[in-house]
Length: 255
Image (cartoon, rainbow, N blue to C red; front, side, top):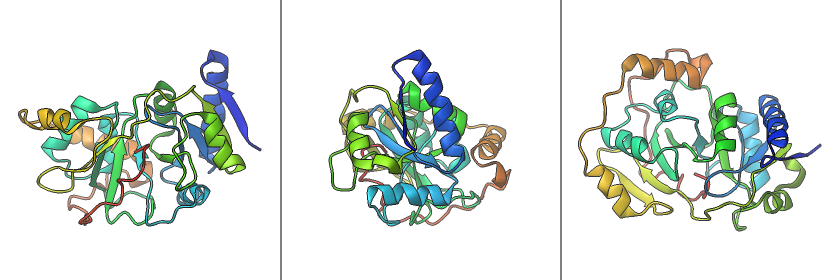
């Protein structure tokens, strides 16, 4: 049975957060607002639920969903060998409409599809989404629409396309920005822009031209790994996973 909650109302938001968290923990799907368009998502570590997200959109495993996370620190639990330039971009633009494609930790217990050893990460600038992510942890989230249809900017549009394949709809009001996130491939020695969106190339270049990023505490990285995937504990892979020549994460407005 599908449930819908008005998250612009404090009571509706509290009820919706509880219902959404319960749905995700039991392997069901949730539609949620982001700072770009509405997304449909699930627990990133539930392979069956990820498959259900792809099926709801009519999408195959060759187009794996991005992963939304609550804080930049979480990225160090999911990705390995984060370049200094990627760290600078995180510090400047997260939360915000920037997706970074990074080499994934091989020790993580998940299956997002045919990722070729990468993961596309973003911290959305939306309090409803962030509240849910802080409770649930990393979520595999793709735009809440049928493949080939325009991205949903309202919960009505999302429900019209996804229907009862989704357990809980969180209504945060109309999206304020229809522009997709900008996507940067950070799997190599130099950053590579895969898609320009809400952030311009000049904004990206201005940050990349600055000095070295702050040093990352190894102990904080280890803690982030355990927080991101408790089953992995401290098994962060010291060797980089094989990254693709052309990551397949650049087509999703929610990313």
